[in-house]
Length: 202
Image (tube, rainbow, N blue to C red; front, side, top):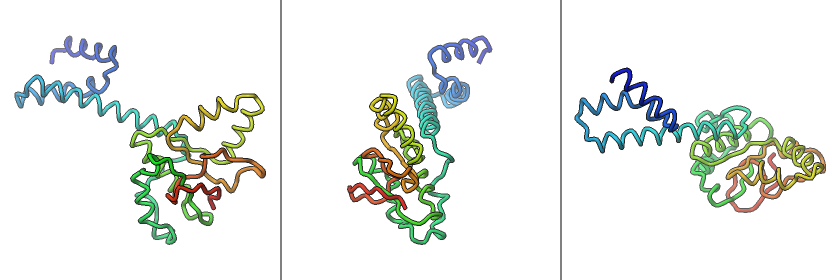
């Protein structure tokens, strides 16, 4: 590709915010020329590259906005250590069907068995599937909502910080300030898909 053409294409892609095409065009164009790909097929490859690039950026943004203290995955979870963790049930949760059914799930258990790890892992998986997700500690969420209530902004903050997300993870509910009330529906991770809300996270 001539340098002038390349510069022009890059400029057009930047103006139209087609970063995926800009990144993939040289390799795809060369491949298309070698294979004598039709223009329609070549155009489809470019559009697919742009779509995948945008999806990847969206996944990165969702994971960043979620506010996870660290990225954890189910593959990293040590079921051998946490022998009481129901592997089959947790793997079923990885389908994220509970999110679509708007079911609350709570992880119960003693400290140190990985409840937060599982909560983050499911939350991270949700971000990679395109679900808007938010992670809070119960203490942080309560303090934020109490401050919003004092400022007369409770509904606004509830909408922005709670209701705007498809999946809300509230960690360490047992450590919430004494007398604090967790908003309905804002319960910890998601474990038992019974449809009943449980307000203890162990």
